[in-house]
Length: 95
Image (cartoon, rainbow, N blue to C red; front, top):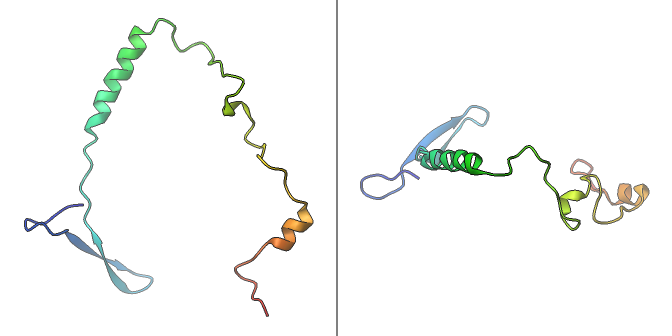
């Protein structure tokens, strides 16, 4: 968050055309991303000094959760009829 010389948070106004109202939000400081260059150098250095390379497929342990399919749920689903009865709609008004 950007600050004024007196230490208070710098604010700016934004007009919302739909509601026709002004709102106040803090001014954000522009990010510098200094760390990206350091990370890139480390990655290139690691790739150059790596003896094994990345052309081999990664071997996952038998207990690794990534071996499970994304479509497998951790619990058995309820019957469809029960799920349909439990469903609550935001648009259906209760009498």
